Image 1: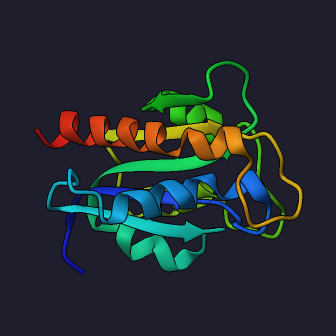
Image 2 (image 1 turned 45 degrees about the horizontal axis):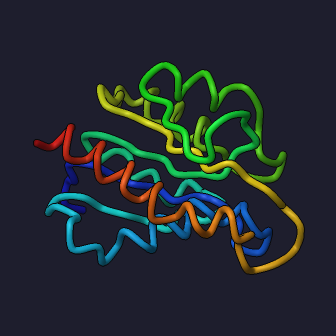
Length: 155
């Protein structure tokens, strides 16, 4: 696998309404005209160790996910703030979390000097394949936040 400047992982379960917001942002970005070369955007779904190779071959990491957080509908957690949020709780006992994947890469000596979590405020995690309207309206904004980070990091 060819190394990437930035790996963008859109995570979430697209069968649980807003939980699929991260996946929606990754798909929005995959063919975006402003996406620079060397950036890999992946629909990471509900995560698995199959992403390990992509994580090991990237210089920087941006995770996009739905979250239950107070404040603005799209928030960015950079560096240690990302780790703090990821370690504050698990999505589901049956899923490999992004914190678990990052721990596995660290065991092999891989760390990121540049890492961020772009979180979209979740409204509903009920069964359904459609994002709620407020979350769907924030997909382009979240994508622009990701692109801004990429521009800053890859200059």
